[in-house]
Image: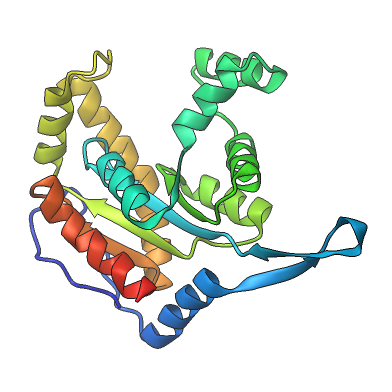
Length: 237
């Protein structure tokens, strides 16, 4: 189940690769979640069948290409793509009280509380007609991870980690020319340092549990997706 990828000079040289000993158990769990339905009481005495949400965390530094790959996964496997950043921006634009609080927090240079972000993710999951979710760019820290597991009462089924060298990520961010004020080399490198400091413990935590798929994020979009494709195809076969 866990596929080794070619080694390369990486920003995450400290990443601890781990191959789970209970491969068969994880494969069974994945297939079970994809096929299992839970019968629950419903209004008017009828019963309804709800699928257990299948959650994949998608992690990688800025410029690692995870957003592009998420779009391909959605198209090929029918997942719903949830971006924590997009959910926060959507809440701000809704002019709700919570959105105003989020905006004020950001303006003050503070971090939005983990519980707020997790609640937005939870609401998006519950309001979706789907049961397969890619959660992109979250959790960003151990605090995020702990809040997610506490509020949702569950861990992700697995984690996709797009591993990309620092110089490659810097080059990609600088070349995408999206007009962001933080798309300059000094700011990008600061963002990468923060990402490594906060995300590496999360990646290592789930790696210890045998839940991380490490993707070599160097190459063309199609070459990288070939790795992703093999992972999801194996689970659905």
